[in-house]
Image 1 (cartoon, rainbow, N blue to C red):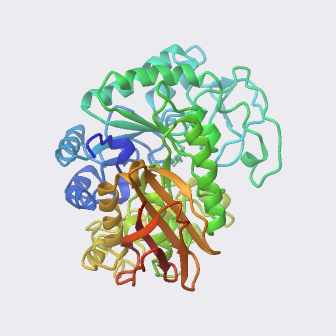
Image 2 (tube, protein in one colour):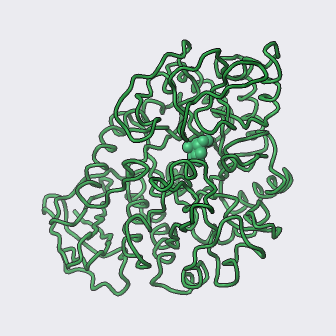
Length: 529
Ligand code: GLC
């Protein structure tokens, strides 16, 4: 593909840095560790890395409480290590995307320390202070307002109380935050993932949110006034102009409480390049897995993104969700993980692959007293938090799974002697080998990257779709059932041809004009006119 655009046509791999590779043996992943694994990532075929926050942080929310936006946490390395990472990644054709957490800071950030020092502080209005709390709730439980005894006012925090929300209405805050983007752009960073960007602005009058039914306090409100305010649009235009003053820079937003319609409203040539819409999760607790629900979700996103001319993103797993491999299967069988991987890599949109997803890592389970994640502590046992999907990368079967020389910050999943990069690299039938083949097939097949999406009528239990350009089409078919299935294509659409890839090595393939699927098999076949 000679008009290859990395963030549209490539695959982006999310590295949760503290769990990826520990270079200095302190039990936490770090930048030197990550650098030592770049060859692995390059062999996997990915085009960019999104790094979860690497900035100094007291870890009230594991890096999402930032104490200095223009520095590297010494536990992860130095700015020099970061420059080395950029150079080494770029040398391999891999771009670097940083996580920008700008809805809030840590309460230890110098801006907040100054803001809370007294009511007359020059930075008092850099955060949102009020004499009287309104009814807003924190996403991680309780009121969104914390009383500050020293100055007698309340400050707003949509997440933990150690994460005060900044006041984006202050021109000084806006200038300071845009300077942070400039700082990293000048260093050569290729793009940014914007953490909960659609909550930056709050209603100027801090009006109460209307109530609705829901499980947690936060869910029992319509989030009318604490997010998605119109002031976001002019800010996105300024940010985009800044990014466009450098070549091929990218922004992807984490849309909070996303729907496809809400997500596309923030994207466009003078707004974000892309934003997540999380089409395959229904809530923090519900992840349906059947062809009709999935087809319905794909259709919904396709119509909305197509109409808006916005390029979609696809996410099956990330640091906030239970891993897809474990969501869709019990035990160690990877058939469902292969299907989820095929969806991730064969749908129209930029795939975001979460570290360890390529080897089908499962969530760890922790006892209540071992839980570290704030919402997990608050809502256990209804919701156990996000530690489960953040366990150390399983590199090999040595002690601590090759992640570290010492006990890591979270336990390694006990399946690591059987499930690791080393064991799967040696096995052509492994999920890792399947993932590599899929990524390289994508790279070699423009229809899979740029082609339109069209659903195909399929027997019960089978999900099938075409990805196509006028000159070339491919058929992607997945059998969710435990019996064999077969698919015919309307001759007006095309003739089914060669098998390009199957999730079951040694699959018997097809007869001309047919697609034969074993139980839980995925096949990708050529379609000729
Ligand atoms: C985003 C992050 C999540 C974090 C929250 C608060 O949702 O993905 O991990 O806890 O923002 O920063």
